[in-house]
Image (cartoon, rainbow, N blue to C red; front, side, top):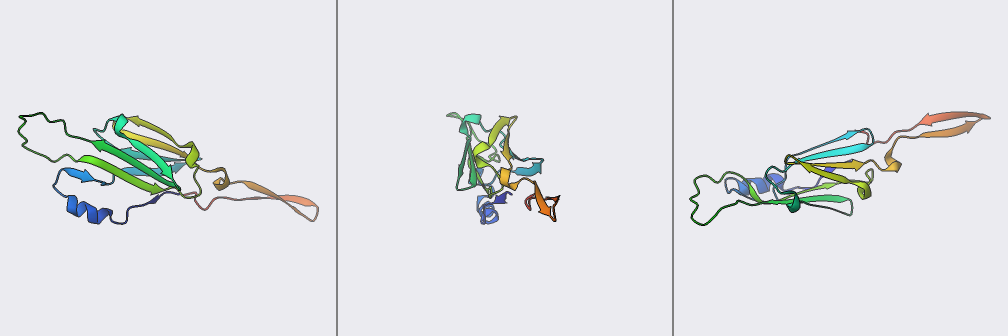
Length: 145
């Protein structure tokens, strides 16, 4: 399960409107489960791959990236609408995901993370013995969605 960790996100956005600078504004993100993996796609247009930092601490995944404006002395700025600065996004991975096996790929301005579902969170069959006959019960994780 993924949980967003940004209780003041909307309030921060109000104070950042029209400034052209970004300080911790969340990046647009999609997350979904497909079979035994959770896939996360984060839009980072114009961000160099070497400015992206991904870390996990205490089941919290943190993605930090930086985009700067390439200006030279003598440039006259007419518009300043593109967000630049440091971008940061945090999500709680919960116990159902394997934080040790996360894989990351960055292509065409989209960061893609593959987070495997932890073995203990996967559905499994449990064999039971009742009156000398064996029956099986199929179990499933509550984090299947």
